[in-house]
Image (cartoon, rainbow, N blue to C red; front, side, top):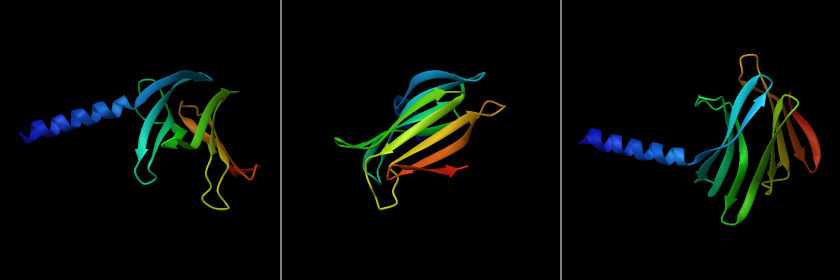
Length: 138
């Protein structure tokens, strides 16, 4: 009986978990193909619903990188993100519509490039504070 209950719980959890994921686009960077998914998540600590861009290689479950698509509470949007593929790079931009303190970011830009084995490597992080950019990495 215990095995049946545990199996049923795992089946229901895995079905619910999969329902929060949908394919947005198939992209190609250089000679490598990637899939960009939209995945949802509820943050109990912040009391908001978030959706993420998640990048994977076709046929694999491992996440190569991710970034916010949206974060909302009721009808208020706190974070909005977008992505673009250009010049052999994948770039995510996140805009923050809340301020926690005087050093909070306005937005963040993450740039990924493919490695020789087809994974993605973070090539550059640019932070924007008060409308001015600061390269945080490399």
